[in-house]
Amino acid sequence: MPRVIFIDTDGTETEVQADVGKSVMEAAVENNVPGIDADCGGMCACATCHIIVEEAWFPVTGPRTDNEEAMLGFLPDLNERARLGCQIKLNEEMDGLTVRLPIGQF
Amino acid sequence: MTDRDAANRYDCVIVGAGHAGSACVGALRQAGFAGTIALIGDELDIPYHRPPLSKALLTGERAHDDLALRPAEFYEKQNVTLMLGVRVDNIDRPAKVLHLTDGSRVGFGDLVLATGSSNRSIPVKGVDLPGVLSLRGMEDARALKTALEKGGTMIIVGAGYIGLEVAASARKLGLNVVVVEREDRVLKRVGSVPVSEKIQAYHEGQGVRFLLNAEVAGFEGESELKAVVLKDGTHLAAESALIGIGAVANQQIAERAGLKCGNGIIVDDDTRTDDPHIYAIGDCTMRPLAALGSHGRLESVHNANEQAKRAAAAICDKPQRPVEVTWNWSDQYDLRIQSAGIAGDGLNIVVRGDKLPDPVAVFRLDANDVIIMAETINAPAEFNFSRDAIGKGLKLDPAKLRDRTVPIRECIVQSEQQTEDNLCRA
Ligand SMILES: Cc1cc2nc3c(=O)[nH]c(=O)nc-3n(C[C@H](O)[C@H](O)[C@H](O)COP(=O)(O)OP(=O)(O)OC[C@H]3O[C@@H](n4cnc5c(N)ncnc54)[C@H](O)[C@@H]3O)c2cc1C
Ligand code: FES
Image 1 (cartoon, each protein chain N blue to C red):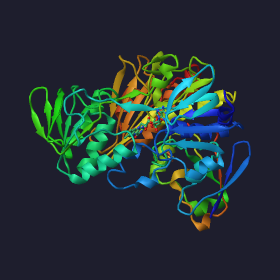
Image 2 (cartoon, rainbow over the protein chains, first blue to last red):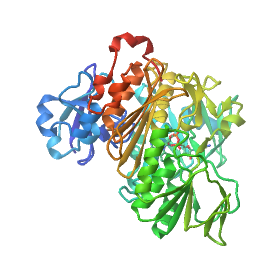
Image 3 (cartoon, rainbow over the protein chains, first blue to last red):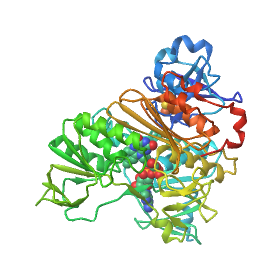
Image 4 (cartoon, rainbow over the protein chains, first blue to last red):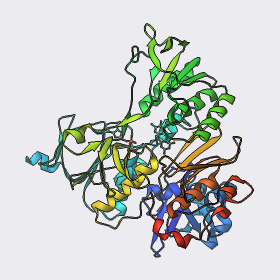
């Protein structure tokens, strides 16, 4: 099972495990990781699963899709590695995936 | 309290295992609540996503067992006692004990009511006939799915979100669909005129027939529905009918316990009722709505989740976050419909975009061009921008808004700093 590490804004790390095929958002929700509200449950409607992929993992996850761009593009200082957690599906290659939480969801 | 009751006492008890109740469990633990928690609900399934019941579940894109809000292990890991399939009948406030329908009692330190809402019915003849349906929970969705599999004609009574979503799902499955609405336009309670018109036209393009200003007089049939009869005498032959005319708050147990209720259980921004140890969250509440300067009832997943977090913060004595801009969404065919904010009357309406399914956004601005509300269709950029802009109380340029070639971010008139006084607008 891939492990995902969430780094809070104050530097606190939370490591969780989730099945292959689950999304980064689901990994957070199932383990009650603070900072991921995921109001729409992965329907790509809420943008409250916003995370920033750590540089080392960015080649693995890849950049945001056009739809994610439309959802997050209003943020004036959007990080180039910002993604929606519900749109990143975990695979074996992502074991150890490390992401940061933004200062605030909406 | 007897010894037996004492063994059955929890520091926090949540009544109603839906969106708000489930979210409150997570929020309490995130806020550092270390006491015992029980989540009591009268449905049999572990808390599940309701939105797909009118959409992806009906069309077969999602399955029943794929709808859990959080997996069963979540409640174990969070050390929460889940009591499903049992109802709370009475709250004994002086003793701080709940009476359950199975005869058992559960004591509480703090109590969170998350009982949701129930569908309104129509008091007309034949409303109990098999084939006349409504949609709130998983059981209803199963019955509706069976009706859809039968095919034929489905009459949808009420052109609100749920009615229109089921209409879209039924058309996708090839049924003949007629929508009967008492008002003069669809989505009248929630949407602006341009949104109503565009959505109705889109449904018509998909083959749905609308009868507006029309009221149901009764449902006919011997052992099952055969026809829907309207007040003007029209007979509509039908295999099934779905009543989607809104919902009322499940506030009976609160009322019986003497808690203040209006159109919902009355709560403050902390979600507290007039009893300092009893909170209420989600569809069942009548909450402060700063934008309207009054209390009102919201029915949305976002509201359920937001109030769940606020209750947890209040119970754990943690600082509250600013009140969020309320929003919701609906999916119909290839349309993603979203709205942000709440609007009173007398606002200026600005339309951006024209023909669906291309992006359309309808903004409501006050006399100073400050954005108060936005409704968007297939326009995620406009939607997310608006949620942020409403929260900040930004002033927008109507002419630029109307021009879809101007990027949405460039429609702001003043700098974000100048509006700090407007920051916490709900
Ligand atoms: C078909 C459908 C589609 C929807 N689509 C959308 C959408 O697309 N977007 C959106 O934002 N919102 C949507 N909504 C609205 C959204 O689902 C609700 O606003 C949300 O579920 C409210 O959460 P809640 O916890 O307050 O109520 P609920 O989720 O309804 O949960 C309340 C629970 O409490 C139980 N209960 C009540 N009384 C008692 C008692 N005395 N004892 C024990 N248990 C009790 C109820 O049976 C229920 O299980 C939809 C609703 C429906 C029905
Ligand atoms: S969970 Fe809503 S957009 Fe990801």
